[in-house]
Amino acid sequence: MINYNKMIFESSNPGRIGYSLPRQRFTDYQVEKLDNKLLRKAEILLPEVSELDVLRHFTNISNKNFGVENGFYPLGSCTMKYNPKINEEMAGNKAFKNLHPLQPASTTQGALEVYHNLQTYLSDISGLFEFSLNPYAGAHGELVGLMVIKAYHEDRGDFKRKKIIIPDSAHGTNPASTTVCGMEVVEITSNKRGRVDLESLKAVLNDEIAGMMLTNPNTLGIFENDICEITKLVHAAGGLMYYDGANLNALLGKVRPGDMGFDVMHINLHKTFSTPHGGGGPGSGPVGVTEVLAKYLPNPRVKKLEEYYFVENSGEALGQISSYFGNYLVALRAYTYIRTLGKENLKLVGPYATLNANYISNALKTTYELPIPGFCMHEVVFNGLIDKDNDVRTLDIAKRLLDFGMHAPTIYFPLLFPQSIMIEPTETESKETIDDFIDVMRKIAIEAKEEPDKLKEAPTKTPIRRTDEVFAAKMMIFSYKDYLEYINSRG
Ligand SMILES: Cc1ncc(COP(=O)(O)O)c(C=O)c1O
Image (cartoon, rainbow, N blue to C red; front, top):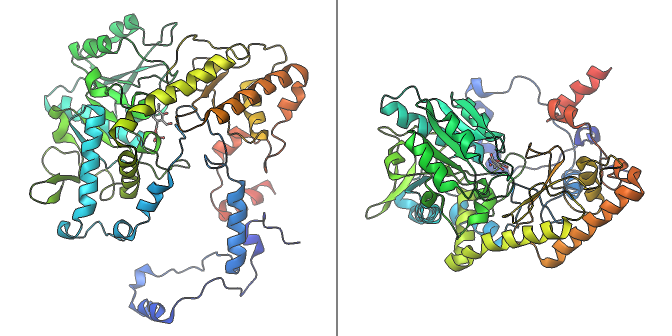
């Protein structure tokens, strides 16, 4: 029997062909017309398989994948909400899809209008003056935002300000972006309620502070009540405030980062504004800034006089940080989402996401340890089971959930608790789905007491059982060549 689980290279049959090029097109690409430098010298390693075999191979692999369209996907901090199909329909529309970024603006007015409108909508939604849609991801947006902060201080001749304050609850990309930007991280501790500790903050403020990065609600799903005091303190010390917009979903339509006193922010379009993400993209992390900082934003941005036109890089602008406009079709999907919901419905996103998370928090708090009791925003963090007798860890719970056809929540993040399990249901899930999840989590708690081995052996129903996660992260195999090298290295 043919095994479609095999690597596609292992099904290779010399001479078998899976394509046919139209004659006309083939002659368009005559080899002799190509520059010799561009010609491949070595034989390329490709599998020789039929089109049908390739199709079956990839269809079978895709069936093993798990996405938000397969089942509940409560991955905290990642906002795995449903991406409405109309977004894809728009992105697949030839009128957008076939445009070339170097086309003259006079021939792309509609596409530029969409881009321009999205820049404006993001400003309205966030309360910041202007946006660049260029960055490819949240982390990329962080880097660009920090470059803006650095340029601002250096422009004023203040070269001493190289330190960025980051709370210990922050996402790992915050310190990573700071370091990549050539700045130094100053970590401050959270208080017992999981919020920024004002005394710790005051203690690190001085004339070397360039700014502070904060997400609100923070990564514990808790709103920073002291946000106005925090921004006032940092500003008084000469620093700027950076808003990590990964958690903007919770605030959508309720509070704006600009009104809280933030100067720079990124928005993860692939989270809050329902565009696909995972596996490193395709994402989009637009960066917004206050009026004073707008001159540093990277280009191209789109402006309007009589017609829409794009601003090339010039003056104090940071320089190009993506190819052309960034991920245009991702921006188009986000634009479609905003237009589909409309202003009034957009205001319901945050409250529904918050309602769903609190419903879960209340239902599970007698079984799972809730280290910070009380009201949460769009996500809830537990610290494993209350009953820790059988040494059932968060990893075991997460793996067992897979057997019930649900994606695991984020685990072991935030780092504040040893058994963190971070659940973000988003606003797109029905009460029935959430009730089902709660039932499963309760069942798992009973199993932990009565049959703990079942949890330690989970998952049993997935194509791959437990992996060696350290090995998987350190020794990534991206190609068949990598795979062969790995097999050979084992002898
Ligand atoms: C709080 C927070 N900040 C930043 C990021 C980085 O965003 P991205 O994955 O788009 O680079 C994430 C991603 O999960 C996040 O949760």
